[in-house]
Image: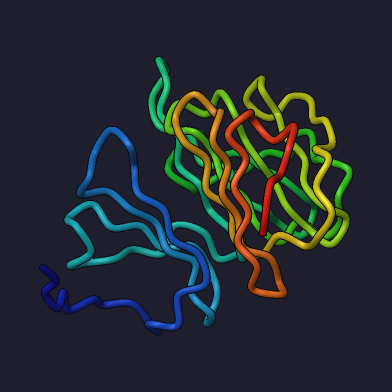
Length: 170
């Protein structure tokens, strides 16, 4: 079931959204009017935590707390303070990054763009290209990182159950 949640965002044209895996009431949204916004009460109230656009925000949990990944003008970046400050991290060799997904613990990240797919199995420190032909538009990855599902710009659906080594379909 669904219910309306009045949201005090400057726009409901949301281009990126993620939820804290350790706290379901905490979430972040990147809206078309700009910036990154955080809610700590399940979307009822919002606070702008970053004026810069943070594309494709993804929240992951770990022993040191929640960490965010997102795409800035400088490439892939990470934040350990709820999106208030960001530092550059290793970016995959795909440009531009057009989609980003991660396991809830951040052990596996998958990024997509016009040049295909890339995967990191060390929290974004290093990346390797996956053998996928096409332009991923939206990506999802299961915990453990074995199943990756994606939709391409051409609206084709693909699913890999071996971590991205093979891609039956569409």
